[in-house]
Image 1 (cartoon, rainbow, N blue to C red):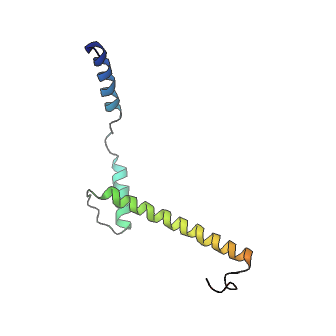
Image 2 (cartoon, rainbow, N blue to C red; image 1 turned 180 degrees about the vertical axis):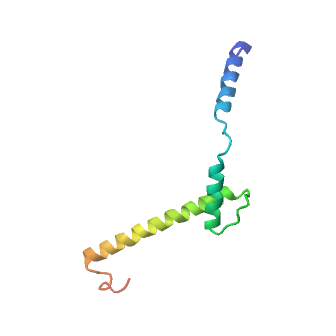
Image 3 (tube, helix red, strand yellow; image 1 turned 180 degrees about the horizontal axis):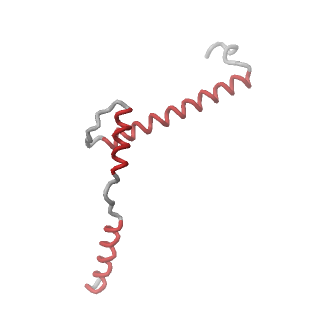
Amino acid sequence: MSIAARLPLAAFALSMLVACGSSTPDPKDDAASEAEARELGRDTDETVLDDMIQTQDRARAVEDVTMDAKRNLDEAIDAQTGDASDESGGN
């Protein structure tokens, strides 16, 4: 590739990187995350593990929803089968 072809390509790549940069953080988001951390009983100091901890918190919330759905499904199955699990020998 010639220099004349590389320069516009480099300028395009640089402009894409600049466009993808993040803006300054919103102070409301910081206050909300600190309040949420206090509610969960965690220290509000930021650490390198915050992303992982937040991921675990979201997973716990999803697990609660999933277990509630499973419990409802089990109750519906029991209602439809007349609670046949007691008659099958307790497997």
